[in-house]
Image (cartoon, rainbow, N blue to C red; front, side, top):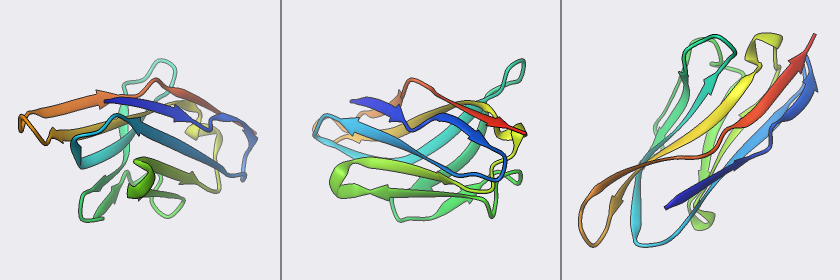
Length: 120
């Protein structure tokens, strides 16, 4: 399974962006999908998570501004980011926790990051 993240870019404070994470491959089941971010000089942190029944969790710093969602038909996860702040500037990564339907093996797959820059 490969993940392809996209949608990053440069936006002014108060603006919005929508990140996408598309999973390619077949024969797997999503358990949960996360969005992480890593700002320069900081550790990678969990931003949002959604599980296979649609429950979501958010970091305190983004709750109320970011929304995670999934289009199961397209095997794509989204992160809608509104009211962006300069402190949201980071490389954003998606992570999928999957189960191989044939082997039952658990798989974790990271997408390549997409850079979000918020100017003040």
